[in-house]
Image 1 (cartoon, protein in one colour):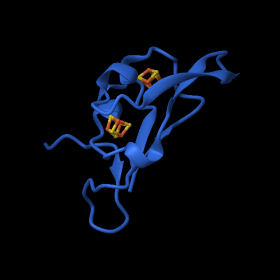
Image 2 (cartoon, helix red, strand yellow):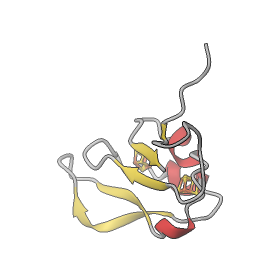
Image 3 (cartoon, protein in one colour):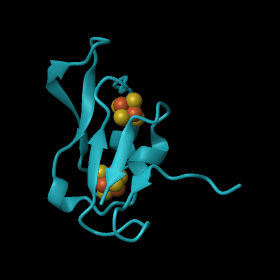
Length: 85
Ligand code: SF4
Ligand code: SF4
């Protein structure tokens, strides 16, 4: 069985430039694994708002720089990242 990547492409069913990384706010546990996985170094932990678990969550610091590689999503142990394109 092929692995299922958490990538949504409404046009072609594949990863393309101009993707957008989204964190499912209440699923993130703030472990920071995704911040080390991003080749563009654009994933960080925000310190403005805690989720329902009291956690500061990950976010993309530069949507325009995201290449949709899904490395962050594959690294997340809680499947808290979705890549849209
Ligand atoms: S999809 Fe790739 S480039 Fe975009 S935030 Fe995730 S790891 Fe970084
Ligand atoms: S790897 Fe997942 S759970 Fe950990 S900080 Fe990133 S989005 Fe949150």
